[in-house]
Image 1 (cartoon, rainbow, N blue to C red):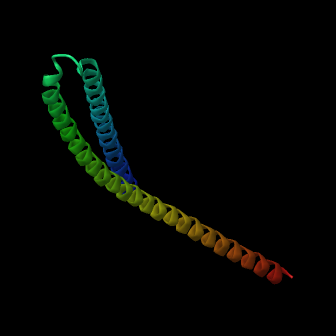
Image 2 (cartoon, helix red, strand yellow):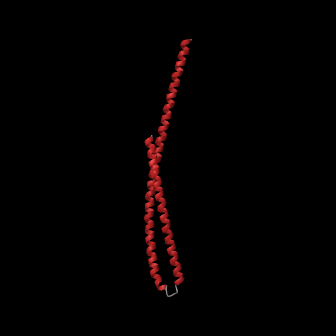
Image 3 (tube, rainbow, N blue to C red):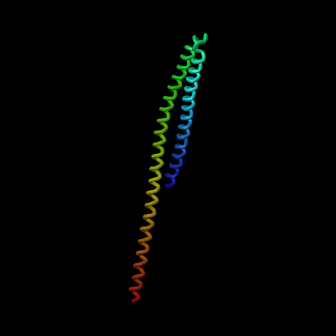
Length: 139
């Protein structure tokens, strides 16, 4: 049973590592999402601010550059989502293994208790037979 406890401990550590990785990916995804929002907001503000000025000519390049950056960030977010899905599957698998190990340990403990109870009952039955035998013999 010690080996099962060790396996559980190892798997719990693996689980913690995967959860930490997932949190880092989620934070990275949030940062990229916020960057997209900020860039689009900045673009909208610049378009409104300079729509009728002599700088309006340069806004087209700024818009194209912003769109390219936002598209690149969106692709990165899609890739992060794929990595998160893989990690979540691994987390589910590890959690399932841990639960299986815990069930095996629980069943083994139940078996030990059952055997101990059976031995105790057998011993008490033998004692009862001895006592009856002594009483019957003395009468």
